[in-house]
Every structure is written in C-alpha cells, then in structure tokens.
Length: 443
Image (cartoon, rainbow, N blue to C red; front, side, top):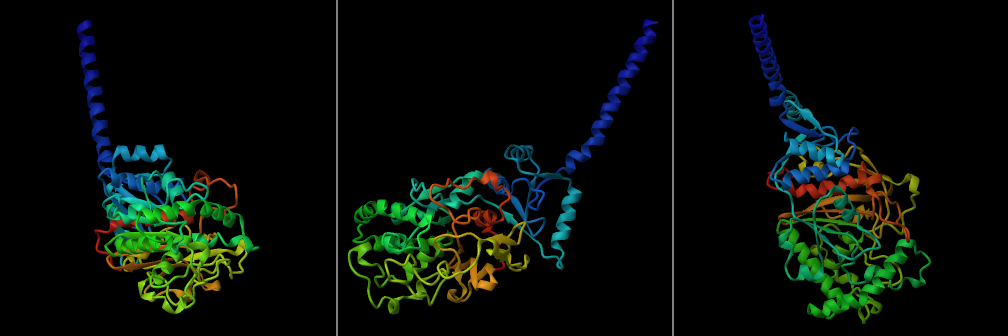
C-alpha cells in the first residue's frame, strides 16, 4: 500500500513539475515581448510634466529615449527596464508596457510617408543652467518651478559666472526676469505711473534693493556701469548660442536681451539708472544686425514708461482674459523636425498669460524667425524660434503659463495642481530639445 502511494506521489510530483514548466514556457513569450515602455502624452497621461522628468532620468542614467512626434501627443518610448517602470509608478506617470509586435506596429505607422509623425532619438541628458541669482525669491521663475517639479537637475549661473567664462559647461541656458539694458526693468522711475500692477510694484522693490549690489558687482568685474556689464553678459550669451548652445528666454529676458545687443554703441539709459542722460540720437545708432530675433523696433527712452520698446505689445493690447489664447502651428514632423519637437502638446490652443513682456509684435521679427504660436487677430507672436551660428534659441512671451497675472503676496504656482498644463509643456519641450542635437535635423 505504501509502495503504491509512493508511486502515485511521484507521478503527482512529475505532473506538477511538468505543469509548472509548461506554464513558465508558455509565459516566456510575454516576458520577451515586453520590450518597450511607452509614456503616452495624450489625454490619458496623469502627469505630463513629470513625464519629461522620467525621460530626462532615463537619459541621465545612460539610456536612450525615442520621442514619437505627433504620436499620442508626442509620446516617449524606451526599452523596457523594471527600474524605469518603477520610476514611472513612483512619480505618478502613466506608462504602458508594450510587446515587440505593438512596437513594430507603432514604427510602421510613424514611418508612413502620408502620416505627419516622426521619431527623434534623444541620446544624452543636457546640462542645464538658469540665469538668475539663487536668492531671487519673490517672483519665482516658471522654468525653475517646472524643473523642480519634474525633478530635472539644473545649476544657477549669473553675471559673475558668465563673465568668468562658465557658460561652455552647459548645453541649455534659460533667461527670465532680467533687464539686459541696465535699466532695472524700468521700475525705479515708476512712482509717477498710475499703471502699476502688483507685479510691477514687486519688481520695483526688488530692483531698488539690487541696484547697489549690481553696481558693486559691475565695479568688481571692471565695468563702470551696470549697463556695460549687462551688455557684456548678453554678448557672452550670444556667443554661447553661436557656439552651439541652446537659449530659452521668457518674459523680459527675451526683448531686453535683443535691445541691449542692438544698443551696444549707444546709451539708452536715463540718468536715474546710470548717472548720465541717454543719448538723444540713440534710436538712429541701434544696430539690428547684432540681434537674434527682432529688428526695426523703437526704444522708449522715458524712465517712467515701464516699456523698453515697441517689441512687446503689453501696453497696447486690448484683450480680455477670457479671450486671451494663442494657437500652436502644425508643422510637418518629417521635414520641420525642430519646430515639431518644440510644439509637441496634447492641446493646440494655449491659455494666454501676462508678464513684463507678454507678446511680440510680429512686424518686428527678423526674416527667418519661425513663429510657433500666435494670436492672429492681434498680430502678435507668443512663441518663436530661430537659429544663430551653430546654436538655436526660443523666446516665449509671458511670466507663468498657469498664473494669468502674478499678484503681490501670491505664492508661486503649485504645479501639483496643474500636472497636465499645455503651457508648461512648451517649456519642457525646450529642455529636452538639446538631447537630440546629435541627430541630423532637417531644419
């Protein structure tokens, strides 16, 4: 009896072993075929902004990422790795594990000449710098906010670092709240103006506090005026771009940059800013060949106007907040690769938002500048791009894509409340853009 039971027991063990082996073998194709991870960027994505952070994390850890232009909102795809899948889960990013057959299907769809899609391979995490004092504080930079939220590492660099030659350490540089003309955002003469808003008042206070420090730094670096120091900084940044760097500017960082470059051979600063009057013939001495984006603009020499020039249309536009939107262009992904990358989004209509520079007069754009987002009815460009030397630049009007007009004592935008912001996605498109620089782009 025991012998018979032993034989039966051995048979059961054999069948169980065979069954487990069969199940394991049967399951193997599913493991092998789970070859890729897709991070969808359409409306199913729970957190679009942190998705860019995951893509950056993959690059930072030696991986590669395929950016699928116009496929499900500009999705990211990378080879399967459990660590990547776990990273998505930890960060709250939606992802899909795909078998080889599905990947082949996607590739076939994207490569179809009749379909407006393409694949760009991201190869190396760019080194990122933000041009700003570390303690700027009150008016938090939208780019700093979104880099921190997406967990993308960056360094601060400011005037002293630029003058000392530290820019070549980086691939990508951001400019935001800045006045490269040396007029402290034209806020110090603003007490006579009745047009202040809360942001103007806050910027005025910051500028009055920073004026002595800026003057001391200028002297330390060998400049007689802050305006001369800022011009040297702007010229170094332009050289960074010409050498192959990527420049991204928002708000007053965009228009004041070009104005300072154009005014290199004249003085546009009133005595309240630099101790001597502006050159009355400054307008005729502007050199538009020195600028990146703008030409034929008229500088405003009044210290009380709050306006640098007629590049920015903030003071003349009559648009209600509920009507303030701009539209992204639809570019050919297979031929206009660069603007296609920079306009990847799950929404083509973007909410407008104000800043010290809100929107650019299209009549002031240089030939060759690509308008990527505009409000046609107002003849204004909100999002523009161009090449300079071996590098490229992007200018984006406004201060904060999720804060229409930042007010005094308002806290910085909490991006956990806006994880799917289409306006902030445009910033992050630019952040990842340099990772594709080894690819021979068609534009």
